[in-house]
Length: 147
Image (cartoon, rainbow, N blue to C red; front, top):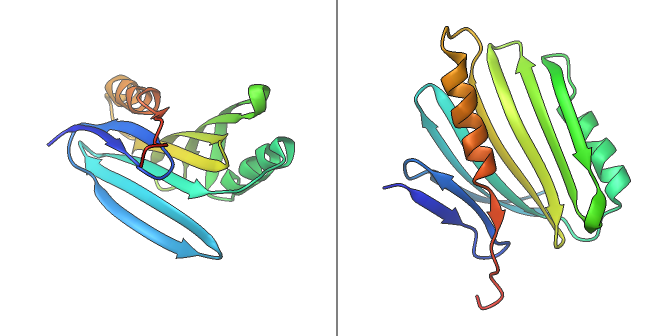
């Protein structure tokens, strides 16, 4: 089964080519839901966090610090904090041999993370990159006010 997965609480929505695994957790006073699919040597993940009110400038800095570590090389970062939302897009390479395309979005007191990764060592990275971007671009926030 494939199709759009929608978080009925936050409205997070993304297209998965096959049915993803679902996980719901409450850790460190934060509730989140996550959908993950591992297929074609790639991984596709959609996460939705209940974040409350946030200072967008501080949140953008915090996200950048969060993705920085000794195993990751940041190839590209773009951040937009217009219209009372935050959109941060990262392209990362890690020491385990993967490239990550990660988009963080803060809107309506929710923080969303949509992520795809693929192996760096592959000779055919163009198809991987296209699939990764297609997954990230499938993200939207649906109106779930009637749920």
